Length: 258
Image (tube, rainbow, N blue to C red):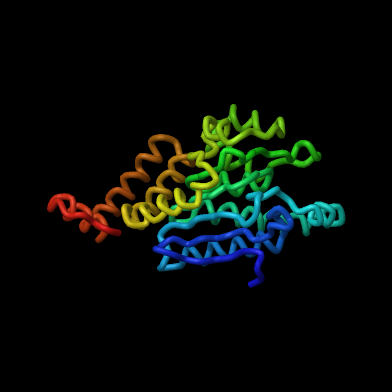
């Protein structure tokens, strides 16, 4: 494992750091592979209940690396297919990770970098951050991220961002629902840490995983089918040790730490 990414845990929170500040944390195949490995690692890390994705330097991620873009001109169709599948696996692993994933965005998140932030469960950003999907400006398309963004924002907002390639500030991104919290740069690290550590002890890890599964399932089924899936998960959860422990704690008015 090279130093394109860093991984650490503290107080039941895993921190995954993109570590290419000299390249504005731009994405290339090696970084995509490392990030995928790090999220798989976090998913199996018993010392971590919450995962924070952040970046070194002044930019969260500027999207595709320039050298990588140059390389694309010489790729075969098979190369392009394998490369796209790798990016899909990264986004999918973040989106479906059975743990809460928080993005700490300090600086701009552009194109693929904005895609990384968008698939996280909760996003904190500094006011100076800019967000946008600029692919159409270079004759490319935001193919993979469009699948996630239309779910998150709805078709109207997704079209506005994806078809224009315009950048928006953090306040606008918050009003659109692209991010959750706008926090001053001097406070964002502590705010994310406090939130992550609070979530690590205040919510059942099993319940978080099943709730994420439920939300994902609900978007792929019609209402009647999603209700049937919800019934099955509800029954499954009621018989779990976490649920029994939580209900007993509530009834006995005991403070419960997960």
